Image (cartoon, rainbow, N blue to C red):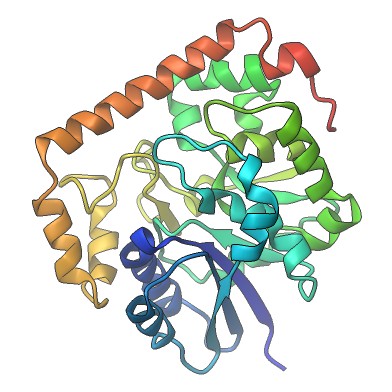
Length: 308
């Protein structure tokens, strides 16, 4: 019997074109001796988009569209969102309780490109840890972010992972009532900067396996000659800007999707006003970090690591 590799994405209707690029790269680099089960978590998708996603199915590569609207209504109304974040960023937290059939799974953001067989990532030995992930590239390269993780979360930058590419120990998370811990913490404190990623890092501190950087190579950290997986996070989007590091990988798969012309038009139409907005968001993020560092009532100063 072929080994099953469960992989989760969380998308909204605006991210479907980028998601299909990620899915195309994942499919092209898979091991044909294994079964890949793709679960797409969403609350609102156009029927035409659903059709384009589902037609990418083939033997050994199944795709399930999972409407999580009821879960959103049940829990998400109390969660805080900001700027480029959407509510879909929180969906990964609910995977352990929603998919009891799996003990382990991969979660990927939809702004990723996979250049290597993802089953190699799935094979990482989690032991009794909650998560396996890669050091966040922005934190690694920007001093203010490094100071933020240490002084506001109590987490050294070397242990702070990016939540866009993770292997999840669903069995252990259920056993340790991870969802209950998240809901308790979300009511106790609202993280202003990285939101869901900060929650995950606080809850998983000392329960994380740090992976090699080439499993989550980011444009800000452009020192990977042959990255296994690229994550076009924050504002470094090749469908907005020319000259983004690793952009050639994105476009080589984008050409094989139904959205190629649309993606090109997005880049061509990305105005100076849009670019100024991106710069403003980047400055705002840095300023928010500085404010939290200076805040004597920030999370770490107030609560320490009470959830570990």
